[in-house]
Each structure stands twice: as structure tokens, then as C-alpha cells.
View 1 (cartoon, rainbow, N blue to C red):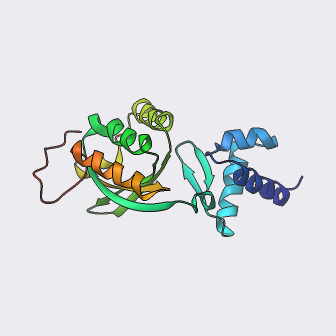
View 2 (cartoon, rainbow, N blue to C red; view 1 turned 180 degrees about the vertical axis):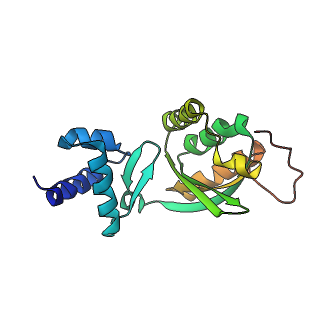
Length: 180
């Protein structure tokens, strides 16, 4: 199989999977190096395919079109990160990304693609093992998430529970000093 055929097969594989696939897993499937797959994905993106790189691997964005998306503002310290993610996924929604507003760089975003408690736990474990702070540490806890949901009621429950937990950002409330 030549490189063009392999890229078509990589695209087919991503279309068939609803969960992210790591470059290593794809490489194993095709008997090539991880770096070859990284290059293939870069070329697929350059040719117009909407492939997102998440902490757990690549996912084709078109798979999410049957869902709605809403951006929400949150505020918490590192102790409440899991709580925030659990509230979202336990109510049938997903956390697609995180965005912070940096005074020098402007908006900084990271792909999360968290659909379940397992995904949330894997993300938190990866943060811990890498000693990397969450992006919201750059903004003293204030950050945005794109939430994916199928039903409006699911999003309503998420917003209510985040507010009850004190994790939904509001300019009118006195917010505790977040420690990171």
C-alpha cells in the first residue's frame, strides 16, 4: 500500500471509530511508525479533513454533528477539576475543550474530548503524571469549556449542578481565591 492509500485507510478507520485513536494504535494497525501516522494526519488536515488531536488520540470531528454545542464559563481550583468534569459527563454531556484568555497570547485552547468518568480519570491521571498544571491555572481558575449535548435538558442539568457546586463562573458573585 502506498502512502496515499494508507491515508485513505486512516481516514476510514477514524470514520468507523467513535472514540479517539492514538497515533501508536493506528501505526500498529498499518505496520508503520507513529511518526508516519502523525505526518499522515497532518496531510489529511491540510487537505481539509477536520481531525482533532486530543489527549487520547485523533478523532474525526464530523462524528459530533448530531449534537449541539454550548460554551460555558467555569471557575475552580485544581481540587474541583474532577468534580466539574464528572458533573458534565454524569448528565449525558461531553467536555470537548478548555479555553483560557492569556494576557500575552490571547486565547489558548486544549482539546479534551471527555465523554465519560473514565475519560475524566485518564485526563486527571495524565495531568498528575506529567506534573503539568491545567490550563485554568494560568487564569486563576477562570476558563471556558465547549459542552456537547444531545438534549437541552442535559445541558440545563449541567448548568444547575455546576452552579450549585460553585463551579459556574459569574461576575456578580464573590469568587473564592483559587490556589494552584
